[in-house]
Image (tube, rainbow, N blue to C red; front, side, top):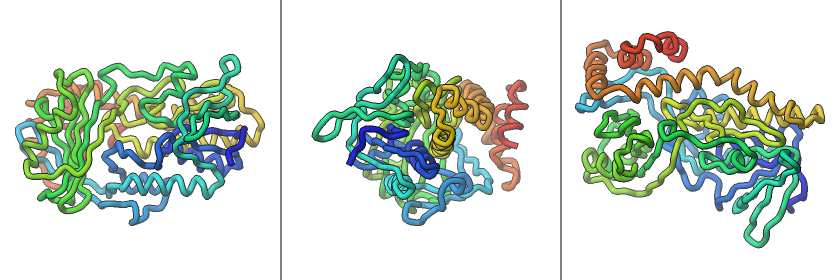
Length: 390
């Protein structure tokens, strides 16, 4: 039974939304989560990779939703030279459908109400104050009131725009992506492999994320300003034809990733934004799962504080922007500057970097040495590099 009023309405059932719902409910807040699709976790618009240590902050890993465990990284230069990278970090390739549903289950266990096939088509407002949402269900349209709306509705977020925020991105700050699930592969499933070069993925990279010995997520992310008139699918088709000509395409998905500076403000009167809706993904790699979960948890904590104090004012909600900035703002800006520098590197520099890395002993081929090698001719970034990676 859907009520007419909740303390918090969360729009979007991805990692940011489910974490926000779970944290808020655990703090005694009445929560309704609305997801427009039929199931949480579908469609999967993600390479599904995440670090084990980072994930442990939020949830105990479960073999049911871990498709594969990875321990190594391999970078491929434009000339085909491979550089294997040493890392202590264990990585997981998730089954996002099961993972997202588990996050939703935990939110429900905490007391949140979850509703799928619930299409939010507008916000309720009183002057500039957001006071609820307008929802289209399978059989009717209804208005639901709230003290707070958390927009966790992804890169195409409408909650922010409806609330009056500028949430669109310049082409250079947006990666257009296409991914296929390939079967029938012959690959070393211990490695995540990333390919670079202007003839592979201008302004971005192509990836191979194994989900087993003969199956992998293979995708591409391109700087939207450098696609040369070709779609991400066309770029990926060309890559797959060259690297995996005999593979079978089992599934495909398209999407976009913001690779932008953090927004100066991610709150307003009656609303917060979290995850891709707030440009929370890593500007350098495009990775967004952990950042989304961090943002959702923080949004839920703020909702809990508002509930305890009885203060849901914009001033109280400003703590969300301030805390995100304190915890992640400088880091995101450093990654953004690194992304800008990397996007200007030539194929020759990537080739030289791979050659230099391969001269190093195996245990010295770290991510730190990758950054030092490829960006050494950007002296102003050295301090940022040290802070980010050392």
